[in-house]
Amino acid sequence: MFELIAPFFHDLYDKTGLNFNIFYDRYEYDRFLSGAVISLKLMFGAILLSLVIGILGAWAQGVGSRVLRGAINAYIQAFRNTPPMIQLLFFYFGLGAFTPQVDMGGYTEPLVSAFAWAMIALGIFGGAYNVEIFRSGLEAVPRPTLEASESLCLSKWQTYRHVTLPLAFRICLPSLTSNLISLAKTTSLAYVISVPEMTYVLNQVWSDTINVPEMMLILFVFYVAVVALLGAGLHFLERKLALPGFGR
Amino acid sequence: MLSLISTMEGNVPRSWTPGMPIVSLRDVRKFYGSLEVLKGISLDVRKGEVICIIGPSGSGKSTLIRCINGLNGIQHGSIRVEGLEVNDPKLDVLALRRKVGIVFQQYNLFPHKTALENVMLAPLLVLKEPRRQVEERARELISKVKLQGKENSYPGELSGGQQQRVAIARSLAMCPDVMLFDEVTAALDPETVKEVLVTIKQLASEGMTCILVTHEMGFAREVADHVYFTDGGVIVEHGPPSELFNDAKDPRTRRFLSQVL
Image (cartoon, rainbow over all chains, first blue to last red; front, side, top):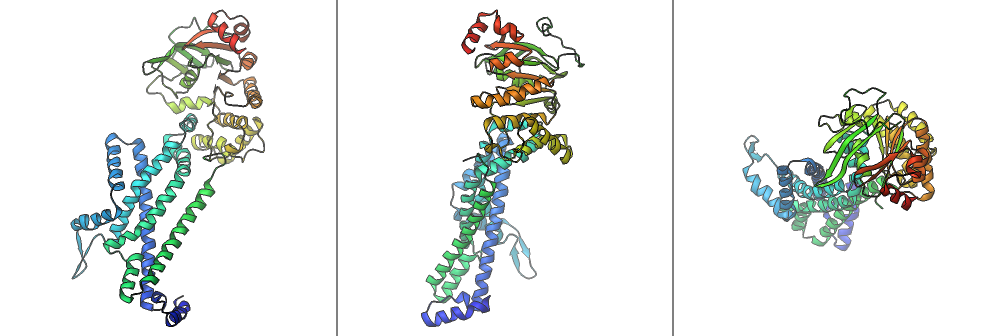
């Protein structure tokens, strides 16, 4: 791949001065790739964690005790009402100060890396919204449909698994899509705790080579492409799960 | 056949034998908060009988029928289904609901399952029967309710009457001993009402015990063995349809019938 595009971008730089050095300089190219991989990993991890939190939280809000429901509400309030950047700083510098260091033989490293903190913080941030999104779905499943399931002797769990969840998921999918898209974009904030993801890496590149407009363009294109792909995937799922005469 | 009702007060024997009423209510009272909606209902249904409950809106008909399979709890009295006491905190609700099928006014099909899957779901999950056997029975039931060719349609693609017939087949798939019908034609267009009633009539003629809450007086007159008129949470009057419809004793019954007939 690199060998294929390098001559073109080198030529481009020579002839026009447009410096896309990440596409012809091996070192910068590797930096760019690793930034992309870390960004994608971070998005994937944060989205996965936020989904798990969302499903468990919404379920607990339905069946849990008063105390548990209160705790979940407090969590939602805390993480919906504070900026995600502050949350990242809080986790990394606030909680990170208390996590143990691991002896790596001569030097120490924190047990929880900046990347792991970013994933946790963003997962928890997105999860707060997902709890509410899943709850709206669960509550929108018509009560009589569940009574029918009950009358057919399905157990609570069977009803949840075969009736409530499939319907609730379809109901909340559109709002889930917008939250996951928003969460994917928010991963760029991991920049503030020095996670070497795309924003951080390209910022380093343009600091080194002073090619800000070119790298800005790459940054835009990267997020547009990744988020469009994610959105398309979720819309495809939505269309695939659409039911005749249900919810439209 | 049903004149025993008023004379049999209180104690229903604990063990049930097939000769006894399959459903037996004694002095059933139900409250929503402080509002008493059922004020002492007693009635018996024998195996194979078809009974209709009629009466004005808000008279507690639907509540009554929903109490029989434990969807609504009662505060006083006794409901027995084949000897199972519904008003018992230790009741095995699933055992009760295995005996009692219910069909609702709004069909309440599972919108994410096809007609065939709707019918198959409970036998697969609850009775844990092999899939082939379940599917075979489900297909038979679907043709029994005259919906051949609609097996793979989703509820949203079916008319109200068709959905209601799927709901009946879904309920029958669990092989209940008693079927409850809660105003099953009230949400349907006049022309589709008939196809549902024909299905119920066929069931009744095959000996299924049926308890219907209905506004279809003509239907009640035709298929019921016994008709109960309820108003204000009590049974005002009951009797065979020929008697109740032609020769009602109570002025409230007469007034109601004069309005709906």
